[in-house]
Image (cartoon, rainbow, N blue to C red; front, side):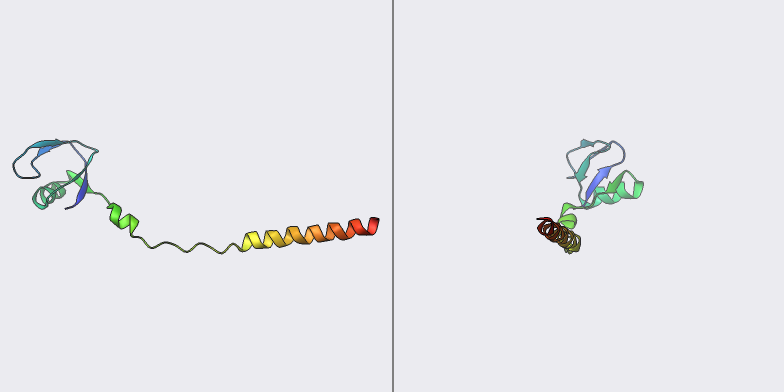
Length: 89
């Protein structure tokens, strides 16, 4: 059953019996017949399902070369400062 977002307010019977008001801007899950009719008329639009969003493969985290390089730079500065201080004594 597709999940849709209503583009306009309409009355409809998703179960074929009970008529309810489907309001523009709201999301609903529709059965095939009602969905096909409204989709062809432009009354509703498909909504991407949460399953598709959650099942996307995770992207690997980028290597943290910047942090390592920054650490080396700080360590090198520290070593240079220590050497200078030792000479001044």
